[in-house]
Length: 170
Image (spheres, helix red, strand yellow):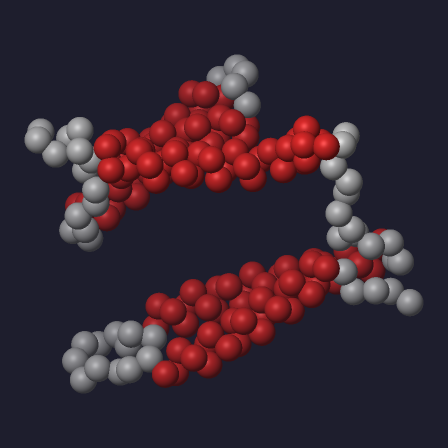
């Protein structure tokens, strides 16, 4: 007998969530003006999420079939004991949350552009390594990704993004 793994359960829950959210999107009020219905974008995002959840479900069921009775979702024990073993096991998520907190804390001072570039660069570098040309690649990724999004929102869509207290007077 093959047991269903935890990933399959999560995928099923995500699909149920998508179904409920899609059903709830029919409750979005339709105004008398405009061409595009307000429910269009939420339905597109929900549809994309449902599609990805289906892929997740198929992959998790295939993994269960390939491994037979072994439970692939059983958590591995943290290496070592105590706080050090726990920290080594969870260090990447801890780094991500700490860097995101730093990003949020620096945004009022540095603004969206500089704090976003710093966040993406530091996150890529902490998770991807410091050796060789990696920092230059990480910097290029950060500048292109955040700079592109910032330019799109600032110039293309006319959204006012935080400029930061250091640059308000410039």
